[in-house]
Length: 298
Ligand code: HSE
Image 1 (cartoon, rainbow, N blue to C red):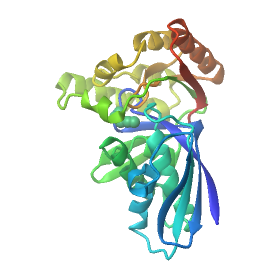
Image 2 (image 1 turned 180 degrees about the vertical axis):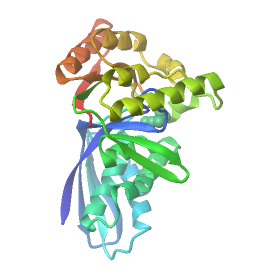
Image 3 (image 1 turned 45 degrees about the vertical axis):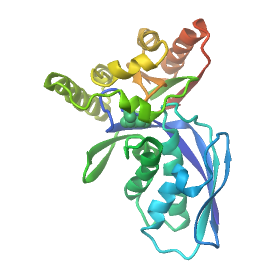
């Protein structure tokens, strides 16, 4: 009566889609074991690889699990072991992986009373604890896989987006921690109509490009003139990393989630590795430690 789960990392925003677009990294993530226990409730019994609270109400997995269990009758409870590989504050959905993993695992042990879509609001409660905002652009792709769009938050309406098979992401994580709450505090609450027009044009272009396997259109649409200029100053060497990625064949590049990780979407595994190397050499040159990932995304 236990389940071992892979909890994937995710890239939120994808440049133009702040708080609405996200994609799952197929081969980067944590592991989690969820098991039934006779006592009711949720206990986090082990966390390896990170210094995170074990108290259920202070842990994103615990909070997401409790939100779910408030909606379903059980006469037993659940123990959770978390093996973190995704670093907190890295910008590739560390809290989302834990929140999504907990509700996915419990749902499976209960015989799947909830659909993957129905699990999203529970996992969002973990995000709310982590960053103060219940955004869904990491938890939705973590739970549904591939690319997802939050068409609406109220009512919640999540759409899974088809994507071409040859898409890969290269993601570089400079070894600094950037809290999502801090990266959100630099944002403006209002934007000029001109910027909004550019942004929704690109969101539409990106979604159209993903559906029609149009790699050039995907690349042209990976732009963000609203959030990236305000946040990129928090990321060491951002302009150099992005330029290196584009020069070496990336379709587009931008901040992963709230940063400091920077992603590049590429057509084909080989290009993705070449792009990853070029991004790495920027940090090698300035002697900044980093972690680099290359993953299929679809
Ligand atoms: N959309 C969120 C943000 C993602 O950019 O603040 C955080 O991972």
